[in-house]
Image (cartoon, rainbow, N blue to C red; front, side, top):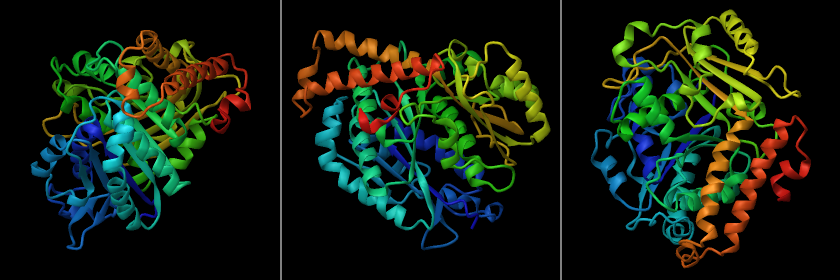
Length: 451
């Protein structure tokens, strides 16, 4: 075994489960695993054991995951889809009723039905791990299931697995696309209740992904499949050095140590390069300097905010493929010379580098051109506060009129929770502003136990 330890993925709610489709399609391609779970000759290096485990009938494997949704439709599609023989039936958990886009309903009623079943499934997968590294959680926080039930699951992960690292990919309400009027309530309540349950949270907003599809990849009317395949490449790049040997790796724990200076400030920006459409395959062969430069452009960012208006606390660059280490140093010197790229005074160097020799994998029928190298840049930048400010403003506009509050109180939430959530996220914005001023954040602001 590679000795890297195992990672369990938990996909919650409609968005989380749909992201699973794209992720596991890509992981199977990367590890030479067929849709029915059979290993091919190319998968003998055992790198797949980070994400997959052997079934009782070798040479078949199954993913280390659990998928959970309050209503059955999306998971039923997986039960009959192309990968139906890959996923163990016990890891697909669905209820009979949806969460009505209501955090409180997901947190209380749906949890009473699904929480124990979900945790039992997670524990069964964990019991079969030799050296469990941590959890990757995927959920949207604008609806009811990912926000409410997802938060209950996060709370239980901390209770049951203590020191294991929890990293989440949060699909965040978009600045101008809002399919659900109460999205700001759900998102702010979820962020408030689960802030202390996660070590690192990557925010992805669909609007940023729509822009990438429309403006960069020439996909004028993207579906969720188009968006989720971009997210899958980001997740793959982020985990490549955890799975494949060689190069210089960055573990879950190192990621947290390098990126998160204070426990509350754990919402880094995430960028991916190269983003080249399939029609431009001949132009995809970028130098390390070009790749690194593109990784710090707003057009390659998974959430809408302008990092040049803030300061960087830290940045982790995860390269994969044909990369020469000396070229990385030159590329970073170019970045540092850019006047709009500013580090806080107390973190002048700020870069952590990981390199995996395994190049990115092309998804047949996908929008991204095949390439020999790629980079994921994860940066803790103070201007992520703008995304939180947008959300607080929308929340306050709804709450000033007490719009729909009775729906939440009727599902067991106390009205005081709304004020607490708003105050907590306003405090988070204040924390980022303090860092921006390069004054160390006081212990009270940084310690979640004292809020």
